[in-house]
Length: 221
Image (cartoon, rainbow, N blue to C red; front, side, top):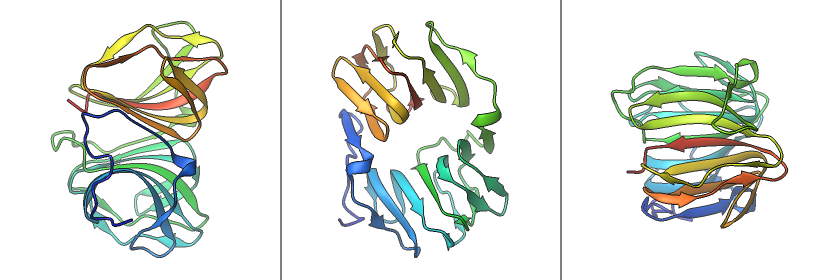
């Protein structure tokens, strides 16, 4: 695959991928590879990816021209600002920089170059130690991660046999299924699935067996 080729870059289109079925693509850094979900640009791109660091690998120091959001899925990520274990959410704002590495190896969900320049606070949340809130229906627990104007990023935990109301996505919705199986009237989405629903799309989600999802809304208008 050519990094310069746009991939699932039309944000007006619904997109569903099962990331474990995708090939790993080498990055410019030795030992760092990516499963590409969405991309628009060359090596400097608006992109959404699953990123894997082999033990002992590192990425050169770089500036986040359009910001970065990370969820550590497995292992431990390091940079000059700290050490981030599984379940850690990081928002690096526009203009920030770091030199990430992973002595032990890790797997991350990463979104690049999609943040508003005014959303300029760095955020680090260890979701394993955070207090969850009651969701809008019984069986839902929500952990807000970042909010700016219409954009919201959160983790949502669904107890088994939880059903949500039909709703429309103003500004669109993006979901990564972290654990379990998430469902709606269009299908079932096991762990590792990535869903992008465009502005003003609609669905009725539920989970029969329970799940944990990372949700970002309001950024696709």
